[in-house]
Every structure is written in C-alpha cells, then in structure tokens.
Length: 244
Image (cartoon, rainbow, N blue to C red; front, side, top):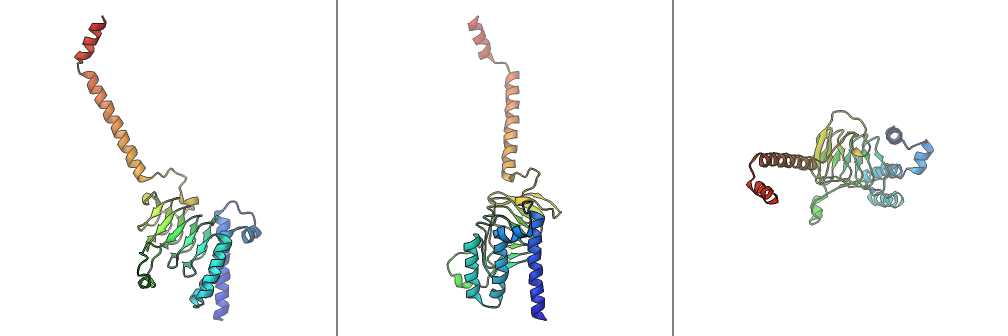
C-alpha cells in the first residue's frame, strides 16, 4: 500500500511539472513536445528518480545517473536537493542546484541560474550536515544568469531579476535586482512574471539614486546660472566698451 501510494504521488508530481510548463511557457504546443523537446523537464524528471535513490542511500547510483542527466541536458541538480511540485526549468542550460538546496512548489528557474554555496572549501568535512545552499519558498521566480548563493531564504512569490547576485534573504513578494541584489519593488500577489522581471519598469535602486543626484546637480547648476545672471558683471561691460 505504501509503495502504491508512493508511485501515485510520484505520478502526481510529474503531472504537476508538466502542467507548470503549459501554464508558464506560451511556446509549448503539445504534450509530446514537452516529453521530447524540453531538456529542463528531462532534468527535473531524472532528479525525481535520483532523489529517491539518494534518500534510499543508493548514493553512488544517484550521483552517476545525475551526472548522466547533466551530460544530456546541461542541467546539474544534486540528487540531495529537495524540490517541490510544479517545478519548471525554462531553457535549462547552465542551471546548477546544490546538494542542500530546498525548493518549494511552483518555482521557476531560467537558464544559467546557480543555487550555490559560499562556504570556504577548507575543512569541508565539517560542512557535510550543514545547510550550504539557498531555500526557495513557493512561487519564486529566478531570472536567467542569476546567482543565489549561501544558506539564505528567498521568500514566497519573490522574484530575482536576470544576472542578479543575491547573498541575503529576500522578503516574500519582493523583486530583487542588481549586483549585489537589492529590493527594487515589493508586491503581494503571486502573478507569474517571465524571467522574474515585472512589465513595469524596475530599475536598479543604485541607478535610481544616481539619477536623483544628477537631477539635483542639474537643479543647482540652473540656480547658480540664475544668480550669476542677476549679478552685475563689470568685465562684460568693459568688453562691450572695447568693442565700441
């Protein structure tokens, strides 16, 4: 009975992964296309198997199959990583997910995303049972090229913009952009946004500060020009007399 329930749960999880593709990728046309043409789905499907082997302590076999999946798909998922339902890796190539990463339900990653660790390589034996990689809550979207590093938590429905580097916890519903990642905006709903980027203009907070400083400088220059224009300028009068 337990075995049958486990198989049923596995099939339900795979169905949710397929449903996620149809929900989030307008390019998909058919179920056959998903099975034959989505390397991200192939990588996730293989991870569902290797993770079970890992938990059953068939770890060498799990690592071997995981490495084979990386060769076929370009996606590296450590079999120890915990991944929830409705997981979608779009495009796939270059994605790396570390051993202690924990991923909730309905999470989306794009290509070249790294969920990595930043603990020092020395004395690695002491880090075996430590959480070294990120935790992504339900509904998180990570844009292409983003690096989410260390044992941090990315809150529910948060977004990480493309090519961002995130080293600190991300609040639920927040959008993070830049290097290092900074909160650019917050939102409350779970609306899907491709590449973790809003249709509204979301600029780097540092860029906004620089723009504000430039506006202030322009305003000060205008005030200085006005003051100088109101003051008598004897050198200009002498120049006009010499011309006469």
